[in-house]
Image 1 (cartoon, rainbow, N blue to C red):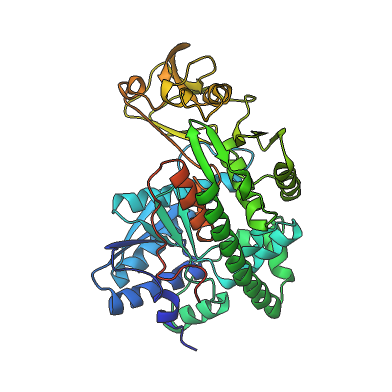
Image 2: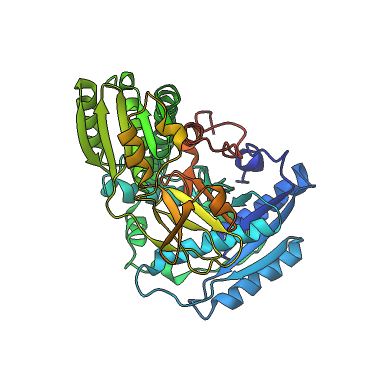
Length: 445
């Protein structure tokens, strides 16, 4: 049965895009995605150019030849192709995670080069089912939504998965009918990997059931995020640097209130994961009851009559040497330098004094302003204080600094876009790019 191109790609908003990037490894899934996308673009959006990118991790001797085979196919069908090579020493530990990180970094680099804000990747219904099965084994709650149809990478490029409702065998049948041969990665049969073991245990009915479960969980997660975003917009402010204030009225005993609290704790603490759900639920109940001072997820919670105040704890604040590449400091700030920053470090402000504007406000306890500011980033040269990272003194050295949400700074699934946008308002940051899908996750996909 022919695959429905409109069902696969019709929901993408191509009206504002002149270029797309697609990741093509040479395996069956990505080759099929390439052919399907080319057919759709030729018919429905001929003015949109396509760049196919193959990432050679330089870990297998066959990889270079495989990339050349993909390049040959791209030339035959009229698609521009580029091979990106992961150079440098490979880590001895965490190699799989490092390779994944390098793959997305190189794909994003190629997309930047052609002015594309969208990268299509070939995750299938089978991949989705395997992901949900693995997360279920680990007891991941929100993670049971699986992979999102779109994930924002580094706050600027969308990773789009149009094949999440398509079975791998259907893609292989499509390739076979077109006479296209694909490459079978030997790691796909290596039972050392959890995904391979899970894959071998899933029956056809299991795959469809898990994919349906992911779709339902994704909609539920998006709805919870929208409810929490509404609470954040209404009850959360940032009256001084690094200092969040939550109106006690937010803690109404709802799941959304607990979720909003978990989000703020993670952002204030600079952690890439949410704090434990049960501990956060207990904390939300205690905050509704009265004064309290407690630490959770690297954040210090100080509930007073004036409100619930949350800031970064003072422990384990890093000191980092600045380089020409961007630095993600403490999970809370991105710091960029125009040129090589000789002798410059970023560390906690500690004894530096905050600006007078926040400290002069009568509705903010001065002790909290000072405590929060002391955990914010300052620039030092050879141990001498230059100033806070986002001040004129730092900018004079070619330094740019802006706050980020550690949870969403690297990978932001579409489920959580409303939440991230609400947080951006609190942090006084520009809005994030809208989803490349015409309808959001709560609409029928």
